[in-house]
Image 1 (cartoon, rainbow, N blue to C red):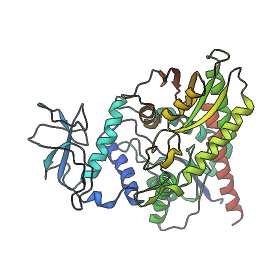
Image 2: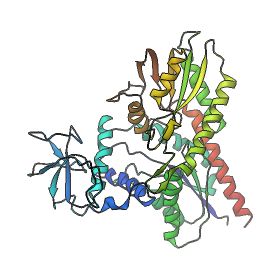
Image 3: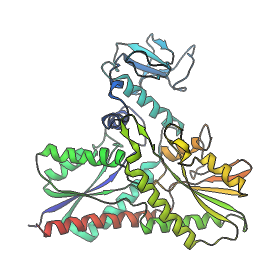
Image 4: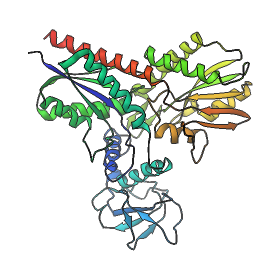
Length: 427
């Protein structure tokens, strides 16, 4: 009997809603940042009780005379609380800075839960509230995974057992879909080899190797079995995905007056080029991978798009562009890029958030912040139009032409499945 291959369609994951259950999904991400050294372990020392915030003004600097207080699990509180002002300096071994908050000292539900995780939950909660507590990422990306699963089942039949898994479990109260849990299920179902197709346009060590992938390896280790596992390459530089980007740019240009000088911004998430904590972020594979997808995409744009005005392609980064993470401004901020193209006489900017398979907190909140849009906003199509420095700017939705993303993801998945089949045959 041919050994069965377990296939994991693995995404980073972004829970649609922040709630008492997904608090723990995000907590796992925070713990991973501590485990790999981005955040010092000392932050876990402080356990003072339950941290509270004003529901409609999280991290407010000033106390409210009648605050509507919630804890990090969104439970309301009316008990007597202490208002704690922000702290900017380190006192002894206590980490800093610390945001303004209210405190139920030594009380549930935060008793024995590190302050750090509660603050981290509120930081996530604040961004989700800016999205009306709904991220569209799952509904943008899950249909892509479902179609890839259908195609794999059609091509390979009963050779495969296919499951979805997410670094940040989207619905933990309904179905546990952490990579660690899913891989153990596949092994318990008789799979003797695991093939992992990552739904990442850009793979990083911090979020893939040391988080999502490591969770799979931990799950295999816990079974006590020696099960081979093979991972795909990133899909961001796949020719099919790039075809979708080319088509998107052509469509955007079709709405622009001929002869207009246009700058295409291909926006990335970003990552430090320095140490962050004890983690050497400069050596993270993110930088090489982000460079590869930009260069291959830019080359394809130059070869396949003709335009009557000037057309340039610029890579910009939404996060970690502060001097301490980005000395010398090596990674270009959107606002700096705008100033440069204005100086060069360009009339319009079109931002294509091409690092993501769908709209996420990174595109809707963090990317808008990077353009100075505070509070962030977008229309029903997840697009934002505005003027800056006298030129028109459009930030597009990250979801466009999903059929090409599906093609790219399916082909990457086939590559890893074929490798798995070959490995089994050569045993």
